[in-house]
Image 1: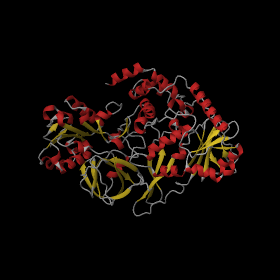
Image 2: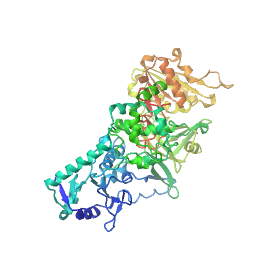
Image 3: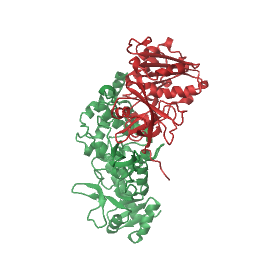
Image 4: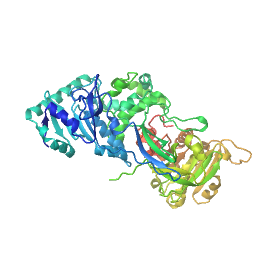
Length: 362
Length: 274
């Protein structure tokens, strides 16, 4: 497929107007940037050269609160379907880590015996335009979890910022159609521009490697994580956790949810799917006789451990993918300043503790 | 491509409510769209507007039109279910989960260990095996409840044991004046000399409270069972029932998708199993 080039002004105009349905893009804020709706006439400054936004774009894939079903009793009519569940949307400025998260969520919601129709509909109509990272956040560590600061797939179009202008890569027929519909804004990229992309990608990758020196997801570390679920080692890490669920909310791959039903008129009910967090005490508390409510993970440290284990040990077994994209957002969100990189490093050094704990467990 | 919505429920009127014990009732449905399940698979039952909870049917999977769940009154949803009467509409969706591995039981001895309301899902297994006893060598059922009045399906034991190959022993934690039988925990029925099975050639299934499962497992291992021979009905809170919402995991396994009956060898290495 042809690789294109667009000038700054042309590309910004294209991004604000070319998509289908509403457009949500990474836009500049006083501090950093965030994913927000942009309209053709809006003054919002697209953020294509800063590090990834602090909040992930997860809500565009699986909304915090969503009606997933409805039913009625005693002959009442069924509530009408939700209005804009399948309206097309265009997402602009997603980073490679965001696309890695989308790939993970696809596995969860689209694969296996049951598909989630709302998720499937959104993914089908969504246009995704991603951007290479040309600067990194101090918490970024995608290189450690097998990622790169630029996307190689999973997009309709991908943008590589140059010192002047942008190189645009086509990733799908839909992306090609968008370019074709605005031919006047693009020309074919020149070899020296592609060279510049290569240099820029190399530069960002090196910055990441420098930032994350000494942190490696070795087999040794992953093996330890698999054994440490109930270890005292977690006590000191979990001591900083205040169970606020900020990390699970901001995480691009955390997808735990809860279903509840509510009234929607006489004899009518709707089923709501809402984000949930495996860190909260009542997350897996069950009904029980005489007010005794069994809870398989009554202690915070075991819930804290479970979240780590899910990311680094269980997800690869379940989906063939790590549940962590290395975006580092959980560290920005955490009130207790839990640094996931530091936890991993300390676990790596705790082999003796792990062995002891296994013995204690019998 | 049309995707069926796994969260959609079928509102189904109760055709019968059976008082089993002071705290346990059986709810019988005849769903307009029959739910074909394998023994051990579960359904989600919705009390309209209140919420839903997972139950493994206690009825025979060969009874195609009817589906029954046997429920202990023990929380928000089950309390409200116990107030329901025939004609009331409840929501159903499913079946979900793997079901008991009946295909692995050919020529085997089958040991079934139940505690309290835990006999409910095991009845679906017992009835499925009774449907065609020729495939297994024999079946030994061990069942315990706290009190004689809390013994589930008490009027059916004789019809089960009237069949060749089937033996059953029952015990209660505390006897009353009417009780002439065994007194003690169900684990006492698992002593080597009264198991009634050839251990090396047996597959064991157990369902009951977590604490019971723990000691049943320990006892079975002590008398010579291998972890691979033991299947446990593991119960965790479930919301979606289809392996997506995250909450019912033991290690990498979601009980709703990979269970709820789990081979002990698969889960024994993980923390917080019992």
